[in-house]
Amino acid sequence: MSKHNSEDIRDTINKMKNDIKNTEENYRETEKLMDQIYDDVIKTDLQIKNMKREQSLKSMKKDITNEYDRENNFKDKQTTQIF
Image 1 (cartoon, one colour):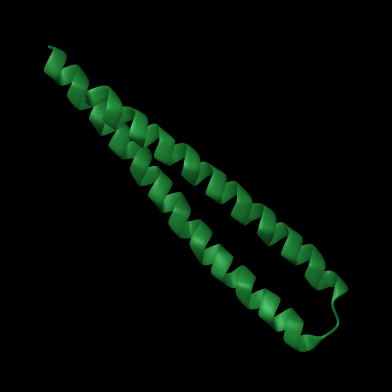
Image 2 (cartoon, one colour):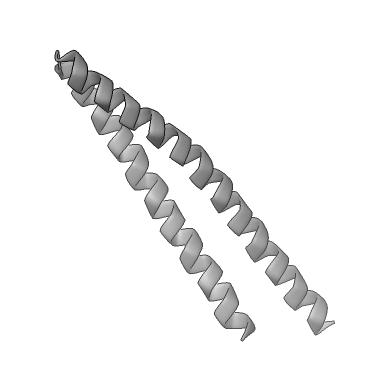
């Protein structure tokens, strides 16, 4: 059962890393696109989307840090139980 939990945590971390990577790519692409758009309404919409992405990235990075901590605590508990 312990291995299963550790694998689940690693899977979660890998998914979170992928989500962060995709969000960062979308952010950069939107920034490039905004430089090419002259319609203020569309540009404002894209700016709002990127602001939401920034907030999401902060949250995702905090969450992944928590998952790393959780994994390390889990490993520490396993080691403690062995001894």
